[in-house]
Length: 542
Image 1: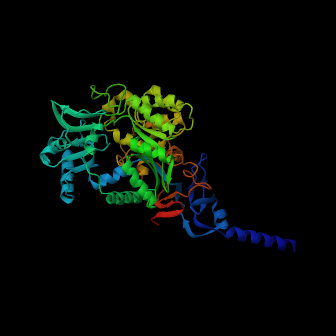
Image 2: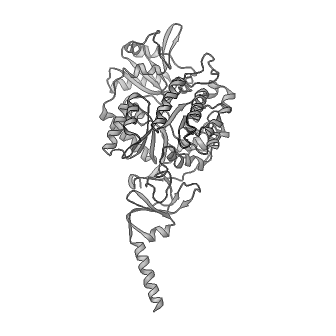
Image 3: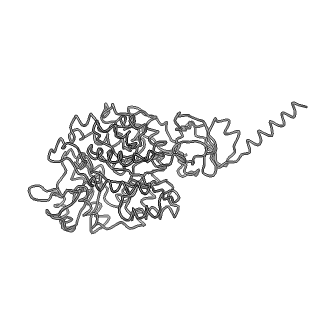
């Protein structure tokens, strides 16, 4: 009788366990929890958008029932990837204009422009994505050929990095730019007393002020298409690296319409309008949109000689680059951010810009140990300044594919010594700070997270160049790379309580990948098999 009673008790307990209903179960999986111990589980249960439990296969299947059960077929399951530095709005606008990425010559660029003009009649031609290094040209182009091909219609073509622009004479005239136009923090290139058509950094503002904005509905449609592509790549979070007020309003509208399926952590440019927004709203949260940071542009880009360097460029000793804001302006923006308890994410590429911003943060934020202020890019650091990342408690937020793109010309621009002692130094930065954040800076690079993994671990592009890897001593291992795209990226946007790991109580943002997530000497394409946001399946290729 005693044994019979015990049997009944065990049966009742087992039935109770089996009777717990959840919304979704994933099993037969390799669940990468991505906690500090890098634990791996076999299954998990999700209810009401949260992870209920993670554990062994038998435990989860015996304890829970669900209407939707995914047999993961032993596939890798990760927290949804973050792209810690991207530009959804820039990619959307690029797609509405002429896309010049991957053009292999000036003539091919002209051909793309002519095709774009034929199918999209416009009063002004606007395009983005050219890179003269892909044309086997080290120097920035002039507008001679552009003038021949388009003598009457204004044309403005932004370089891939967003910090240089090639315009024809018709555009110079349309914008009222002459040899005598003065630009603070920018350059109008002049050779032999004539404008070449190249504008750098804040000189681009003279053009942007005259270019009509795309229709709002067209932009929204492009953003939602990009969102679908990101989710198909297992990306569930994007740190949107710089919004003007009109773009912020568009994201707020999408958030209020609940059209955003992807989480967007937006950085605001510290304009008067955006500062007023921050003062009124504080730490802003609207469905999947969150805002509590400013983006400060300290210098330009390395490829267009705009990155601010301590010493002149190796291939152009007449310039050390451009500081886009004075030290006083940078300090003023930082003080406003501190008063509002806003994070600052500073665009710093050259060693001079990095040094200035790091020292300013070190002085200003000593009484704020958990400020989580970030340096975006951190491409060239003086060897003496790595310690400043630790002392100032600054997070490096870098883009590994920049290194594998820039390797074509980086040594030519900055010389061997600077290249080998502080450039694209991701391993050194991570060792000094304890963590590092990875993004892509799309549309400058592609948002493919597996290109990021290949660049970080193997130091190669997706064509496996260079064969031995670029500055291989600064490669990081695969676990470090994956943390930089999950746990640490979540920390970098104050989201670690909800995101970044697959643990009980966390929001169920999860990516199941089609192929094993690994790294080898040859690039291995990979995509999401199933992507889940807030416990809902938002992409499914089963």
